[in-house]
Length: 243
Image (cartoon, rainbow, N blue to C red; front, side, top):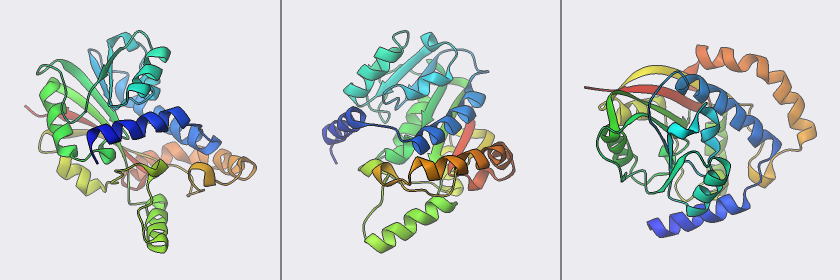
């Protein structure tokens, strides 16, 4: 798929987006982990693949942030929410920045949607200063959500992607390590745990059924994040740029 077609897809996605209860809960769980990984880090920050600006909420001061996305509509929404941040329309696989100009790059739920994630990782390494950090989250095959997707794809005989996205290549811990650790060394590993699969998009189970399960599961989230990070629905990792 061409870059222009991908841009148009995400423009439509952000225009039509309506978060369900379970999607809101999943997003909150992701923010809690990301916030813990990024907020002790000073300096200039790049949010790669910011969409409508959701991930900017994890920063205490968005004035230090550059929000980058391929979707112009997403960037307009991000700017309306966070006018203090600098918004840049560009592809994460070809960043329009000088070498070593950021102290932190946040790339959350983006690498799996790129045609060439290695190009993005190389670009992140290029724009980070020595000792700079890269914080990444990606969906993980090794859990009940991954199993549910494989079963659904077997039954339907076609790809089952989040929100029908054109590229949605989930990761395993080993594949993420292969992609990142030649340029970065691991600093922190966390798993982001969600409920068992309860549907997706407009086909999710009713809130009357899912809300009690969410409340029941919450006390176990942080424990599982630390005990079984490789089995969370999402892998959340902080890396340090190698010398």
